[in-house]
Length: 208
Image (cartoon, rainbow, N blue to C red; front, side, top):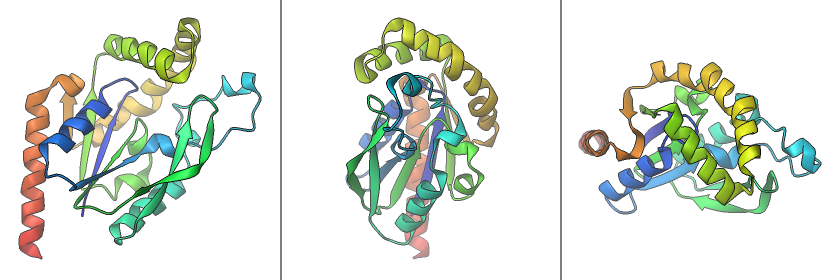
């Protein structure tokens, strides 16, 4: 199994990169584990308290469970990946079964802040996108998917997203094996990554 980490700032285009890699590789050869599924359940908090949750700090993630699930996949076991919703800040009672495949992608803004996770990654990718472009995507996404107003998004960006990006996420770029500038629009870089994955899969099969 090849374990690939894809990190980068909020709104950098990680999801687009993941989708394009899935399209470029053999069908059913990739499973995706999302860091966002592992946010702590805060459904019991009052509405005003939920607005103050710092989703961009490493402490917001249940890393032990995420790492445990990656180890289970490595062992050939299907995992029950949680379902988290930003609207309620809670986990659903339902889960998503994720099967072990030749390639497992774990993606999220903070994945390379967790040393235990990083040392399990075979390939570490950082999606690097200009801050203004990221902010525009964040505004559009948070209004459409998370029920926030423009003023809520901008306040949250100024209070949490930007300072946490500078403190925790941007420094992890130095851990990356591959940096993809311009996010999902950089087709050349995505093609190179896909080619590298195919090559490593071929080498793994030859060894086995």
